[in-house]
Amino acid sequence: MRNVVILQRVIPHYRVRLFERLHQEFGWIVACADEPPRGTGLHVLRDRTAPFARFFPFKFLDAASPYCALVPIGRILSELRPEAIISEFSLQMSSSWQLAARRLLRRSPKVLFWSHGLNTELNIGSLHGLASKGLRKLLFSGVDGNIYYTSECRTSMGLGANSPGFVATNTIDVEEIRRTPSIPLETHLGSPTILSVGRITPDKALPLVVRGFLPLIETFPDATLVIIGDGPDRKHVEAAAGRYLGKNVVLTGSVFDEKVLASYFRRAQLSIIGGAAGLSVNHALAYDVPVLAFNAGPNGPFHHPEISYVKEGVTGWLVDGWSSERLTEVLRAIFANGSDPQVRLHKSLREYVDRELTLDRMIDGFRCVDSFLDAQLT
Image (cartoon, rainbow, N blue to C red):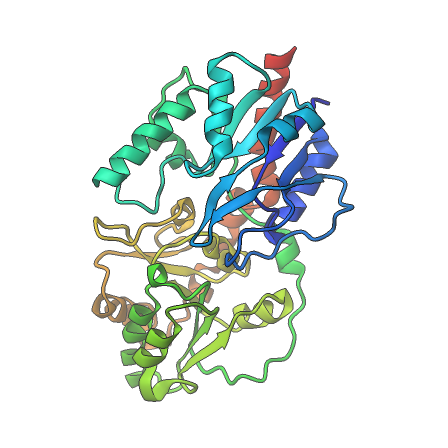
């Protein structure tokens, strides 16, 4: 086994099983911050005895940006002495610049960046977006390889054959989620039940989701939109719901207990993502719930790579035209004549998830990385 270190700011709960598997199979360990950045809402590993984890004093410099960090690279390399390091990439993390500089000077260890590739939260045609793309390409081309979340991410970077690129499909432990037991809910859920899960932030466009949902009540008086999460945009969501708040529009607040989440997902026929899509796509699909999201446009939404897992008529639907009116139109079509989208897409959705989005599929990508490193270090 090679001495390989994965550098991460935090070990969130949805990554624990992945890192356990990588440690078991390859002996890799994770170097991360001893305290997470403030205000992220991340649930992080607190077990300091976990065999795959080592903790170091990162310094997070900006409460508004969880990526802005001074990383003690010298100490990490001195204490762990890795042959290769697989580093989370951000232009705001000092480690990205330090590791790229080391490789420019041909100093050890080997370096691979693990990231989206391009910053998908930016308008790539804007001045900011173009600058970000240029800097990323410069740093990515100077290291030994790059690991991307999707094949689309790899292609979009356009680094060519001289820059080894690998795809480790970004996902969660689907099998474990499917085994999660449900618990009884006190909340009344009508029919159809539609979910929207995630932080209530402006980029999620949840007021738009509410406004697009409300006209559906004309046809389905008992229809329920359940919004699971909390955040700074909550007051705008409540205002959009108006007199339907607590009736057809239910805000649960933050829920981290997977058994409670399982109960909601197993009652739902559809999951709506009004703005930026990320791992919430995988979460819904793991429960066999189809996803409705908007196609990206020049003014948004600016998705994370997981939007590529929404396949039209297979795992859900992608909507052109980022507006509540367009959402209403599509919802009426999906539920026309009492149709159940979950039943309609169940077979194709389950087949896609089993083929593309299991944890084993993600680990296959890292097996390719391991073979590459073994050849490079021999």
